[in-house]
Length: 553
Ligand code: C2E
Ligand code: MG
Ligand code: MG
Image 1 (tube, rainbow, N blue to C red):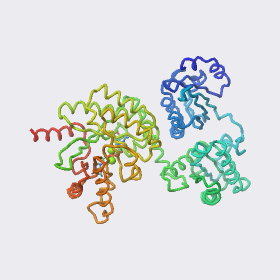
Image 2: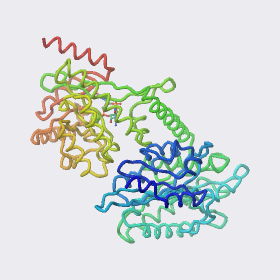
Image 3: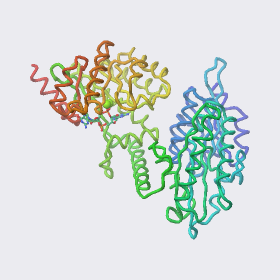
Image 4: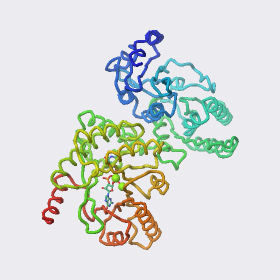
């Protein structure tokens, strides 16, 4: 089929249809796409044919919009959605970001498997003045204002649940709600206040002479809509939203700066989840700048063969005699400019940009290479490494890991795949399938973070696993009086694991007392924590192994 779709004359006919429309068609099985010549020219793409387009194209997308794009495109490639529809900014070959509306559809084979993905991206800078659905002004109308010599405030409202509503109940239902919401918002605005729909799920209210207090009050009334007016009308969902506020000229003197600061505030509101509306501040700007700075540096490292990344190893000991049985490989990243980014920070960014997929494969390959080396000298040393839930949204990671296992010929029964933040998995059945393939080949599966918001009881029931890692947050207070509930839970969970034949690792052992308590639970198999060692570079870890090995002889 692949050749046919690419050579199809229809493709060429559509490709020439308009200067502002960019056509693509993708053979989903090979993940190979063809792009119209005007796309190649305008965006400076490497060529008409691109392999793994999703990942390649992401580098053209504005970092702030990558998440939106990723979520949508992943839904398509994972078979969850048959339609791609989102708006984002992409960089043209002149280095300017332009707004695009991207739409695409999946075509299935005769046997129902998704095989072709085709669609178009439309440039929105020539768009009409009014939004066709709500009849509000579009984002294109915002730049027409001069902000430098004016005072006022702007509110950006994001409808967090719109995507979900569209996919669960259909676009026409979603549109109906958007229209109702727009009408309600209009009814709250006075004359002279301007209302825009700048993206599918984002509205801007611009209030000349307004202040941040005015916007906070307005947002209170808007929230009333979600809690009182709408929840329950159809009884189906809760209409959640987040918002950001800026004042001008203080927070930006032109449209681009104001809108970008509004987006940062909205993003902050969304990330934190608790605050519905966030007023733009210097801290938000600083956080955003740092995150942009790190994002660029991370991409650069990845582009330079993962320069700056390395693995540290933290020993894991047996609860019976505290001998080292293995280690956890933990990612570290340093560059000449950035020396202080902890995994909690840079891994979150890699997850946001999707680059964790590439880095995760690099980690896996390093781990297999270390395993190969160590197994030759120290026999049955185990090594576990972390895999983000995002790496399992398609079968690429699993396929590659199996391929590497063949290539390096390691004893896979000593390699443990640790799944982090499993609570965020979208499709547990599919992930179980991947894990089954890995276990069949010998790998062991561990669930990380047990006891945090990301991994709880349901998991033990839903995911077949070999090892459960009890998070440090559950362990750290066990020796204190305040930890008596944790004590009961850890004892009970580890005991349950013992009965289910699941091994356990208690993390965060920092003191002799904690070691004593955890060793008294029969269900605790292994221990890990600063009491034994912090994560260390390879040479230091090997030294520890060497010492133990010598003692044994
Ligand atoms: P994790 O997988 O739960 O790793 C254990 C973390 O706890 C490590 O932090 C380790 O340094 C820390 N830790 C271990 N023992 C103690 C202790 O006794 N006390 C205290 N206070 N901390 C202890 P680290 O290296 O900063 O990693 C943080 C998280 O980043 C990891 O949590 C894991 O979720 C993620 N991560 C690390 N490497 C990778 C990777 O290669 N891929 C992915 N996807 N995630 C990774
Ligand atoms: Mg871990
Ligand atoms: Mg952990």
